[in-house]
Length: 265
Image (cartoon, rainbow, N blue to C red; front, side, top):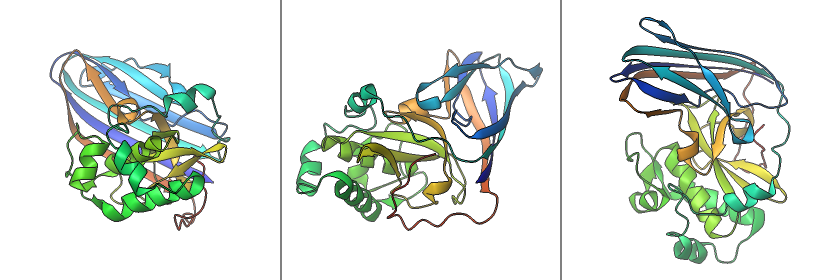
């Protein structure tokens, strides 16, 4: 499978800032060629790569005030290996986190899915979230967690993923969030999905059903979007002016009825 992805960010840096970008394709056993450039209005900026968990590649850029343009492109050939199973992850991804506040949803999740376990539980949680939430751009706040989403019954991909992850953790199923490039996604953007540890491995699930999972390309992985945000900045003010993301598969996109077991590779 040949996948091609790009992202373009235009930023206004109001005061000198340290920026962290999570837009590069994660390391894996696939063949990958990629290029990342960051240009200030006065010239190119230095970029330092930081290795993150699960193959993530974060890039640190110190920028003075001014206009900054970020361009990234990658071609990925083949499939990555199966995600490794680490004992520390199986503990870390059971715990409540900032946006996947499973402790606040414990009673609801236990009551709603009381007789289910394993793959049947994962399927039921994903189906419930997909049926009871409305996907609506701009309907959630950056500070909303899973419990807020449950009350509002609407959100975007990150809100769907947080609610799935939180309800699975409430049932003692390790679950985490991954940011991905998603060929076939409409509208095209960075996409957030969930991974659940079931039957001895990590399985990718997506309650939005907006794109075929088998074509996803991993970017970053973590507890929630605290760990997977495409842009973070510190020490100054940064405003996102515009963003364009593309993701495509060479040939016909794989079909996805939502029922198959799929691994993010």
